[in-house]
Image 1 (tube, helix red, strand yellow):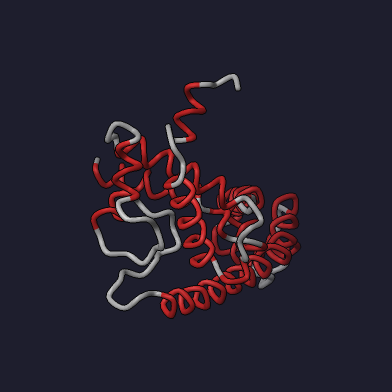
Image 2 (cartoon, helix red, strand yellow):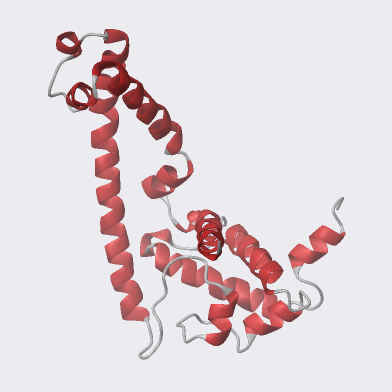
Length: 211
């Protein structure tokens, strides 16, 4: 169960940190499933009716819909394969290039002896108890957790929400790559919260739901 919880928490952090991307990578993560899910469903249905090999050949233009039959399935699959597969392959190749470039810049920016930034929203306990290369105030994570009655899970949830909101503003140069954008957002939110007196903004929002 602990593995499942870790996966769920990682997915939540990944989902909330998607705005660190821009352009095609962001579209793929936010709306790409609207294209991929129906196309995958069409492929599965065609494979069930015509056979997996025939569906594969039609999708990649190896065989024509007329040769396989069931054109009410194979024609849309062939058109989808012609339009979608090359587009997504090119988009994924572009993402790989951007990530490699971003990782290289991130490693160059990392301070000696520190732990490299991953590009995901960092965990508060990691920021507090492990070596890292984020520019944040000393003991920030511990103080933020104390604002939540030392409830680290609640503090982590609010921390991720605030990072997600900061990532949606246009203050970050996304041409520098996702890792750099996330590092800038982490620093901005940490110093904003460090200079803020009183409750965490999310706690205050929960306390005044109608405002």
